[in-house]
Length: 580
Image 1 (cartoon, rainbow, N blue to C red):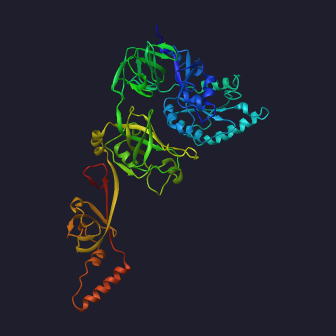
Image 2 (cartoon, rainbow, N blue to C red; image 1 turned 60 degrees about the vertical axis):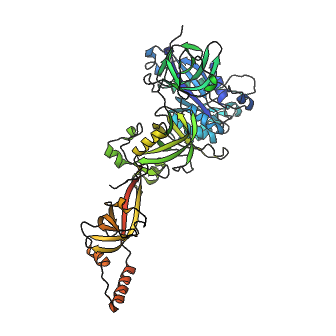
């Protein structure tokens, strides 16, 4: 008879770090149960001696005292720690990103003899994006001289704490261990420091925000068949719950299957919910069709070709993040190339709409107006640089990106989105993760894109500059150089303009055929402006004197300029202009 999953609380611990820091050895040393996707299941992993894919294993302990009230009241007496062993090699960063999205706590494994390395820093960046808590594991303790071990560990801890000061993991716990004394090829010997590490993990365990409500979404990382049973999809429940005989959908193939059986690390259960690691068995499905991806309640997950994402820049990324540029966009387990265009919301717009920064980050408001950006801004750095008061003008409250994927991706709303430059040389000492955010609005296909984009009020501020040629009367001037000869001036009629001498007016229409315009000044021109540009020139001998004197005056004075400032909405098919 199938057991309920309610007797054990599951907590997912990600094991991240630089290649050869000993992550897989640590996972093996801690684990009592291995899944089918554990400890370098990929044959190439064994051949190359490095982890190439996510590995999953687990160990269980009695419920920590600080959780007995919160979890123990539901009848649970044990906690199961699922270890997600992520590859450390730089070329596999997208696999690490995929694994980071399902973990509750990160263990950052550091070779105590080397300290922070390039991929260690990238793992730290991923941890900051995806996790709330981190434990640093200083591995390979056995390689330090026994008589200097304690002092060297303390020195490394101080160095690491200094590194983490500016991150969300300041003052995080650190534990020194030797997961596999003597190295991978050495005979089995007892690991050092594991009891301290397990105690530290227990002390930092918390109850993640989870819910059985909403559609079931399950992140599959391994798929295989069992003769006489069916096809097993192993993975982690990201949302909702499912039970025996429920119908689930494989959205990338648009097929549905019934749940025949469920196991959690070789124990039969009758249901699973958000946060659980399990194997779900279905029948009549070829496992080769789905090595990694998402399954869900029928109709719960759209496959999208574009998205609107609330984004933030990664401070460690030093390259340019320009609109219209292409990045590797990771959404869920999918990493595809995508073109990004950035825009932002400012505080005056937020106040007018009655929005708050929290509400902005959860849903997208199509009624708002947004400013187009040529590049993504690092708001945190800008705030520090300019202080509380700024001469550089207001900073955005929230930045967004329109992401256009080169291949469709299947993902839920509010998915974590990470933009990277994974084609950067892995030997360069630089962070390749550029920005991160949350998916607010998915766009399914080109036809929906044509419907959604015109609703997206993203504008550029345009400024046209011309000059006053002459005054027609005390309430109107003729302007030149504001438009080209071929410009449709009728589209600009009634738009407001400002003269550099201070007068305000509006465009009445074109004047002649050369792009000149007639501008009406309702309050009248200043006497000095009118006198300067309305002088009449006498005929005959006096004409030359009048022109010379006029030229002398104009040589001493700058021409009066005409400024036309307006918003042009870039996704509006009619390219309408708006002024405030």
